[in-house]
Image (cartoon, rainbow, N blue to C red; front, side):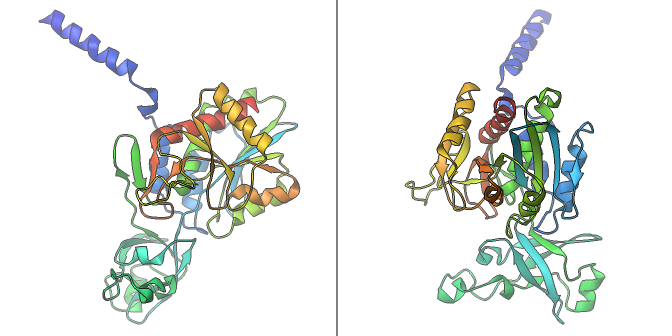
Length: 366
């Protein structure tokens, strides 16, 4: 009996030891960091809690800087080339603009999304005293799609908090200027796929933060490397524009979603990179065309390090585009994601791991 028990233990130990490392999470794995970051509220212009988390997580050996917009960054090494990796901390949401006499909230959207999606959904108002839950009041027959419903805008939304006067709203701690997010939930579709609001761009933030923990920063020689997490990307690349005023960099690698057409109703003729296939270099998007010689260099480094990486064209801009006018080369790095700017942005664990590995390889080999 003892012998059988020992044999069973050895078999279990062997199976655990041989399991793929990409599926083992620790607190500093990109997958674990992504799950933490998703649930932190950070509407454009109110990202301080996300930035606080990142700043608290960074090693004390790094000289971290933070400006009055809440951009955060550090720089290691000296000389040229100067490489900048940047991800944005903000997410889509609302700002309370006014409170009606009947106790509902009027709002303004922060970022580009379809307000129709919010009707009838639960939301969270983030106040100085803590979260307050509510719902987006649906209109009569709001599920019927017609010309009138398609004209619906964020200014027509009303948030119901379960009270009936402005005074009661104030008693809840809710005031003009408070930010609002959809009530977020991480849906684990499998061990390797999740869907949630704010994967864009918390996945980019997580990949960079995970890379920070794995890079030997004492070994950066013959170049300068900066990592930055910026704010207000969704409302006009505002944080990146501030960084571009003071940072003189040769190459910028914005880390953000590749909006893939890997959905059941999407045409596969454009932006098709299947989830689970690896990291992505956004060779062309709405804001830039990456120089061919430079994205080939990225692909060569990826192949050298056995990192699955693809070239792709998609829509959407990127933070690096505001650096181009000063002569910086912009090479966006991504993971394939579907249902961008919705409540169910979908991501595959292996793609996030590949993106993290690619960031590390570029720091080492560029």
